[in-house]
Figure 1 (cartoon, helix red, strand yellow):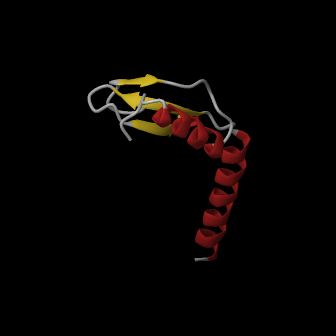
Figure 2: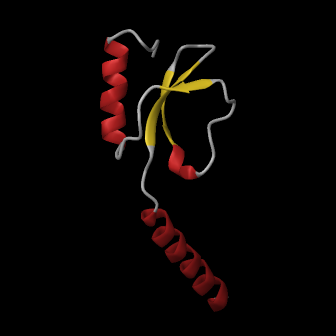
Amino acid sequence: MRKLILGAALAAATFAATSSANAADFRVIKWSITGVCQIYDFSWGFPPIPGDYRKLTPSLPTFAAALSAKDRLARRGRCTL
């Protein structure tokens, strides 16, 4: 039991160390069918599914910056939500 707890703690520490090393890559995307905009973090390593979207912003470092960009796009009428 002690080995299991130690292994779980080691796995959690490894995950925390590797996830903080990856830089965030937030972007605002727009789904083609609905016109809805969404904030997506491309640093996860895989694109959104399904692939019928368009990137509206370049890479943004924080979620707050992406939220601000999405708000500006919505005020200009580029997004439905």
